[in-house]
Length: 68
Ligand code: FES
Picture (cartoon, rainbow, N blue to C red):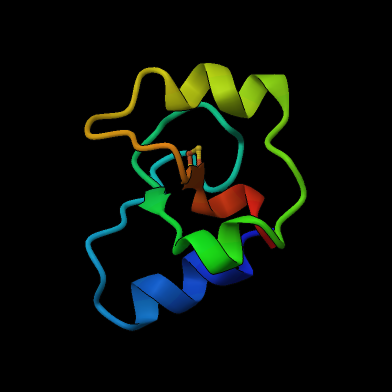
């Protein structure tokens, strides 16, 4: 789902979410706090592949549209 994305957009965060959760862009890239990152389900291979294309990726990067 894209609940988190919607929340972040509502909060004026700089998230675009161009593909609206289809994992076809990386504009919804977020860096997750380490405490939260450990609690999330692991990224799928498709998500990892897309993250590889995102700018400024870190060890705890995720695509926000895939988290919720
Ligand atoms: Fe495009 Fe998340 S909105 S990958």
